[in-house]
Image 1 (tube, rainbow, N blue to C red):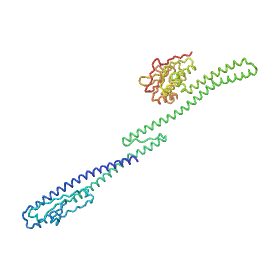
Image 2 (tube, one colour):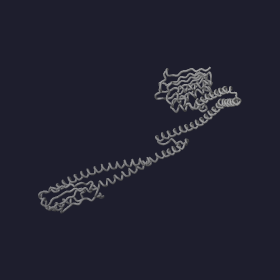
Image 3 (cartoon, helix red, strand yellow):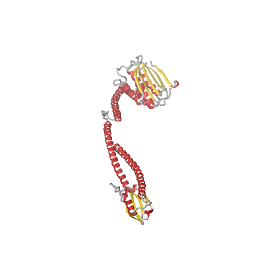
Image 4 (cartoon, helix red, strand yellow):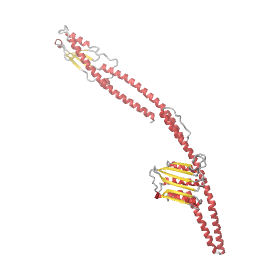
Length: 459
């Protein structure tokens, strides 16, 4: 059932309940009113009869006097007078007929038992019969019936007008909601150009504003996702090119040399010169060992999660060892707690440190890099990587388009954990400071005894 139908049914039900309550009150009031009218009529009729019969002690014609008394009640709206002789009504007055008689069922519902009064006759008249007054509520019930009909007509018109106005108001209010529903459907089809005009009632304007802000955020997120996908494809291509270059420049020559040495061993064996085979075998083994180390370095770059299995501090130590091996003279100062913060947080910390060190070495020509990871007292984890390189050269904001894919990737990883990332030049202009803050509910405190501090210098 639609919202409009529910509201209309609710209002219609409320009106019906109101009518039922009004009908009950009207019934109670009508019964009381008829009861009061009948009692008043019988009392007034009794006094009238007494006054009419007490004005002469010895009337000239008693029978005629009684007949005139009965005739005096002709046309009365509430009383019927009867002259009773020997238990039979010889004369009875006629009631005034109602203009609009009420149905019999309505009369039985309201009238109740009639009131009866035996009029005490003077001694001079008592032997000629008795006078009985009886109430009749037909005219009063007919009046109530007429009033109720008029009231019901007014209430019916009122209810019809209320329902009509409510229907029109709901139609006017729900029509914009239909447009909004259609707009939601188009947004669900990934059409983020959709906007709704912000006009109408204040409540709907607030709803439209929220919808437009939501669509704008979705459009920005969609654009950012596309940009990140493009950046990811570019980074993957660069990583593939780096791996191909490493394999070609490092592993390729060693494989060629091992193949040459194996061919030389074959020739020595054919000539029977077995003394030179041992030397060639040692050369091949040395080449294989060097290839294994190089392949291990490549695996470390491809699968950092394997390094995290042995702990965050050890993974960062392996990262430091990798760069000091390839960049002799590079100095690292590392302050990392032995105990990690959990897999999602440790992975983000490692990625931030890895990218910051890579940028410092490759783009900043740094000679000293400081890595610090610590849990603050404000329930945050602070990751800070500082280098003494050439600083950030881009004119734009670090992490903005054109500022490097790595910084964007770090920012996205940190933001996924509701953290913040700041990349800026050092105050003295000699290098870059990368600082990330990650919220954590129960971050382990890193005391001095648990910190792994080292200065690695390779001359």
